[in-house]
Every structure is written in C-alpha cells, then in structure tokens.
Length: 111
Length: 114
Image 1 (cartoon, each protein chain N blue to C red):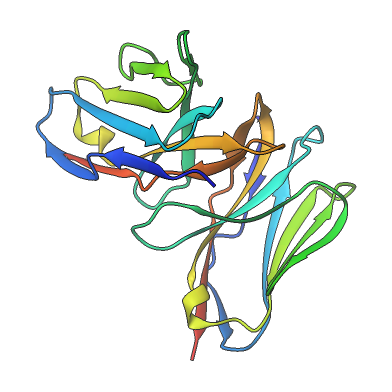
Image 2 (image 1 turned 135 degrees about the vertical axis):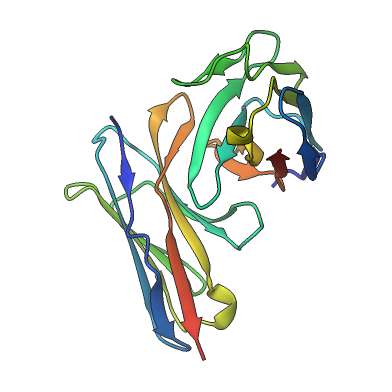
C-alpha cells in the first residue's frame, strides 16, 4: 500500500522560531509532493508543491525534497501564531493525478 | 486558482436518508475529485468525477452508496445514500489546475447523521 507518513504532533514552537515539518513516502514512483495547511473547521489550503530534489522557497516557507531518502519537509521561518494549524503532506502516488495524503502534523506556535 | 463553492455548507440528516452535495467551479476544469475527511482524520479520496462518463471509485467506495454526476466541466454532485451515523464527515471536492494538476479544495460540506 502506498503511504505518506507524518508525525501527528502537536509540534510546539515559540513565536519567531523555525518550524520543521517532516513527511516520508513509500512509493518511489511519486513525482510531485504537496503541502497543505488546514485550519480547524476549514478546508485544506495549498501552501506549495515540489517535484525536484533540493529546496524550494516561497516567502517564509521552504519545501525540501530528497527522493533518495523518500523524504519531504516544510520549514516555516519566523513562525507566527497564525501559522498554528494542521499541515498535510501529499504525494501523487495514486496515479491519474490522484493524491495520497498523510495524516497531518498539528503545529502550535506559542507566544 | 479557481473559485470553488459547495452546497450545502453543512447539514444534519436522519439515518436512512440521502443527501446530494453540489460542487461548482468558476472555470472549466478537467479533473474533479471527491474526498471524505472523518473527524480527526486525514483526507480519503472517494472518487474521481469524470465528465461524460462514470466516476472512478477508490477501493472501499461504491457507486450505489456514493453516486456521482459530472454533467459538464464546471459542476459535479456527490450523493451520500442511505446514510448512517458512520457517514458523519466533511465532504470535500477538489479540482486540478496547472501543469501538475495541482489540487485546490472547496470549502467542504459538514454532514452529521443522527
């Protein structure tokens, strides 16, 4: 079974710190990886996607992909209380443009 | 990204009844999907809604329980049939856009079955 795994957390970081969220995947055929943010009671919101090994930066967010290790991460710099949410990692392992989601990591940014 | 709306936003239903959820997109899209998110859980894909043909269901989901229509490239419906309390969940539609068919989600329908 093709899986995407995340630590459920909660991950607590102080305001202004770097939050590091991690994700592993089992399907070596996966090409694209996505990070979504989901606030309580809301639907998932795309943060960014990555498909090449290395880093991809967008504002305070950096996605990192290591296909050899089957590992994806999301770094959030200068974490703010508004970043407190559940972060979902997804891969295209389902084929046909389908996504397989991890269970999500709850992030808490504390004042 | 496309603007996606869902109706109803929430509902409370009696067991044994059916509910049809609508998903409307403000632009034509090829790929539309329906997901379920049970309380405290992640997203599980129910089916891919195909325009002009039957939906493609994932393992564990069947057409009799979750019939789907996709009459055109901007609209789809998901029906939850013969509901039981176990069907209480958030139902989300998503659309694929861009080179990688990146998925964007609608606001969701929160269903409680009593």
